[in-house]
Amino acid sequence: DSSGWVWTSPTQSAGTVYAVRGTQRIPLPARWLAGYQVRSVRISREGARALVVAGRSGRSYAFVTGVVRDETGRPTGFTDPPLRLVSDLSGARDGAWLDARRIAVLGTRTEAAEQRVWLVQIGGEVAAGVAAPDALTIAVGSNQYELWVQTADGAAYQVGADFPRLPGVRWPAVPG
Image 1 (cartoon, rainbow, N blue to C red):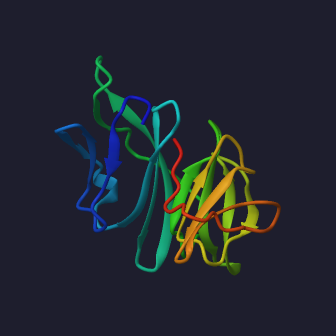
Image 2: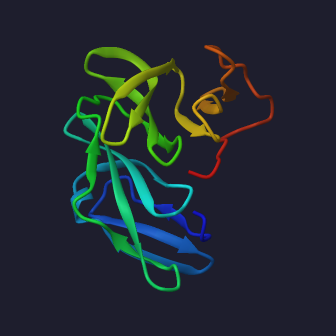
Image 3: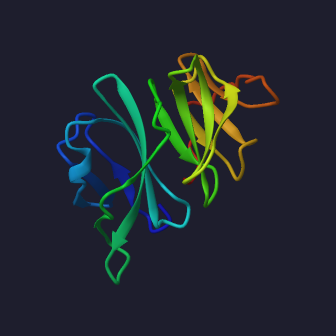
């Protein structure tokens, strides 16, 4: 994140997310995640919010929650309860921040079986983005048109509706 912390979670959550910086490993309570399979944790570019994509009982969820920090910027927890977005996700794999007000979620929705990138206004509309049937993860640059995906064959970058391969690039990542 913007303060140098790396955020992670066990796949099967017991209600804890971890922030790691150097040799410091801080367990952060997230009781609302207990029992979920966590697929991704992404901190917003300004470091104030977390996007968590998780699943349970065949359903998928995208949660947005505030990151609580002490006066030194050290993470201490999350706001509770989180905001749940996209109530009809059935197969979400990953999520990323588009900007301060929007997220992108890689997955399927109940009315659309094709995996795509869904563009989600926090507290508002969900719009279908580009189809990404082979994507395992996504990374978003400074806007929805700067989209990278990781597939089993390597990384690709969105150009229009196509994803040309990026030779030699694997697991692209950008802040957010």
